[in-house]
Image 1: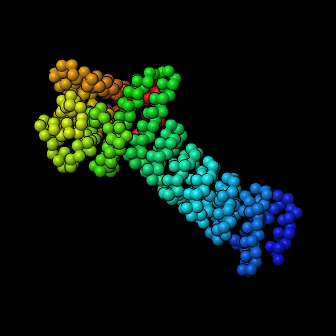
Image 2 (image 1 turned 30 degrees about the horizontal axis):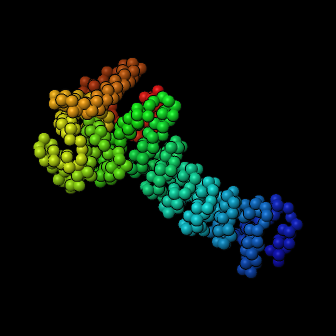
Image 3 (image 1 turned 90 degrees about the vertical axis):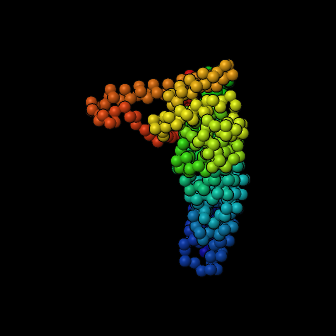
Amino acid sequence: MIVRNFLSWAQTANAAQRAEGAGALARAYLYGDIEPQERRAAEIALMSLLDDPSPLVRRALADNLASAVDAPHAIVSALAADQSDIAAPILSRSPLLTEAELIDCAAIGDAFAQSAIALRARVPAGVCAALAEVGAREAAISLAVNPGADLPEFSMRRMIERFGDDAEMREALLARPWLPATVRNDLVKATAASLSAFVVDCGWLTHERAERLSREERDKANVIIVTQTAERDGRQGVRDLVSHLRASQQLTAGLVLRALLSGNRDLFEAALVELSGLREEKVAGLLRDFRGAGFAALYLRAGLPEKFLPAFRAALEAQREYADIHGGETRLSLMMIERVLTACDEINGGELDRLMALLRRFEMEAALDDARMEAARIAAEAQAPEITAPAAFSGVPARSAPLIDLVAFEAELMQIAA
């Protein structure tokens, strides 16, 4: 009887009154102590309100049924397919929607509806994959900032493929508490490509110079990523990253040589395993005797430039000699570079000019880094109170954990380009 009276009243009430009545009826259905027959009648009345011409009425239903586990599934499904401002509460909160329904709603929804799905308290991996594939930019950003999203690695990489030129998208992904090394690499690559295109469009750099700058800054960041990966995921993590670098054509002789001259041997060893197809134990054994013919054969089998072999041998020798001094760093070692420069200069008859040019750029970068660190140290000492340091600690530079800071990365690229 109550429901019949409600339907009769709804025919003459205005939109605001009908919306208020719809909310009251929904609450009575969910929480009221009503008989089963009346409950069925109330469900029919709620279903009939889905045809109400006013969005206020349907929004009132959505607001009141969104979080309910006892709401009629058919009504919830209908509201989820309604216009976005009505569907949003259902899409973002309803526990009744299945993963398949959410994927379907993501496929047909606009950016507002997709963002509502992306911001659910828990977003299953399948829904994340669908949003990463078809979602709008706003939905992808919402997904990236949601800690409750079970975001697979391949989905993050797909988001970078689609929206990597968007700084807000990159920042949202970078803020996630854990990122696979391959995703961090893709973020660095996307940042470098975006900034390279920007400075070329502005006419600040030629295309060729911007490409070189982008590549060298990307390689510098990749050395840091490899170091972090080795510490966290061990050899297998480095192997996976090197496979990704090879597949994305970033595994170059310049990157491997930079890693060695930064005190990082893990990348070189993993690259030899990846490129040669030999077992890790075999590669490690040949690498220990890097002056022998076995290492030379391994080096050539990996497809690395034959003319660069003396530089790699000199780098390995320098790394062995300066390991205690430079261990744990991720930036180029000026001492190691000078050692390699000397070794290559002694045998250069013109065929190593390209390599010498690369080493000179490494030398300039390392010298600038050393000068900046020394200038910062002197400035800090000038501002700090006069405290005499114990002799045992004098001259020992402080170290911090290597981090990939994309904001600083962008700033450095822009500074060089200016």
